[in-house]
Length: 169
Image (cartoon, rainbow, N blue to C red):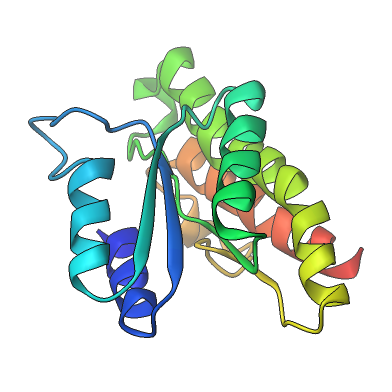
């Protein structure tokens, strides 16, 4: 997907990339795993570290961030790409799916950014140019963006609100 495409492009420039995701074993609906992604990144010229991490678990997030920082001597960029999608209207959106989208999209983005911030601040002090890139849409309150999938749009907009708020901080 888009996360691997971003990683492969960065790998061409020799980037060191930690892949923190849940997919350590092949899944019938999702191609590849963190390990196949790591091999692809190394083949493209980068360094890779595969870390199995459930983005819904704050302890696993903290451990993954620390492992990446220790392995590569810091963190210069965080890419919040994890996202759960369920394009259903309100009456067809079970609470379990609603919770998953908010846990992964909003809470995961917030907690991962929070855990990475001290390392990104150290990167800035060292004269590098740290960033957080979050794959989320621009905020628009036009009803057409909510039509047919209110919960999903709200969850993605939650990611965008993290971007706006943290940029101001």
